Image (cartoon, rainbow, N blue to C red; front, top):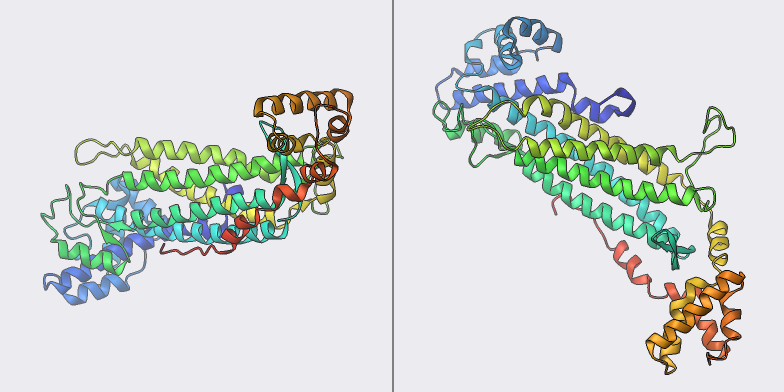
Length: 435
């Protein structure tokens, strides 16, 4: 991921330095496991643990000779061990180290994503509760529908984030799996106890049956969950973009002092964070597609997945983390214009109350179709003549509704009276990483 969209916490997880440290940890634990079996000398395990982590520069220099990054790493690490370096990588194949260390990094990455989703959820929930009675026009197909509240809109975001959190919890469980089973997964040169020892100390489960690699459905699932979380953020960001349109102007991204919205037009205040998130969500969907393509490998393995994963796993993680953190900042500073929301509600001429009138006519004895046709005709007349729907209804001799009944039909509060149940449900949510 380009530095512009990389935040330091996640960048550290996916750094070359962290990767090599994880590789070394797997190698050292494997030697320790051999020592517990009485095969490797105990001092060898101590020496490998004490050895410095090879630097990216050292590995790159050696790789110019080996043309194999893991072999280069093993050479550098073994040569740095004071005594017992010959036990480094004993009985292992490259993917034992790559996939097990990769699982460690993926779990660290998921932990950061879970923390970011939790923080965003709390921010959205707070704003939803704050605006539970901030009335506005609800829109379907981009057209006026019925009254709703900004808080209710935000509540749907919060529940979606909670579901995304649950999916990430499951993704973490599925990706936190290592393997030390050898070249084709038969444990021919490494008994299962080595695998158990290493994985338990890394906080990983052992893959029940591996080939030379951990099956890539796990990684595809991880990428799919990230893409789906990104799609949720895109939905939220798209809504903000629509509501910030000049002719609607109900919300607005914050605009700091000195910021410029356009290099040419000084009046512009564009929803740039929302637009950026929309674009980055497309990247995540592309990365998920690559993950699916990586599932079908030849026989016990090939490396068609390898080069792609070096890009998509870190980039997807970095992209989503950036999106979550930036969107939280956006929501936390979102400018909500409740006055404009009321103006837009009033500008509907009361058309958004048409269903309430329809139901009142049905309750008064009209057939549903007759009632529908009457309200439809009067609504069209109100629109064409730019008159309030209630005025048109009151002049229609076919309608025999009392003023008090019409008052109820045209009450915004009537439409939101039962929405409290949504906020009760929202207030009861607790995000649990072990759920």
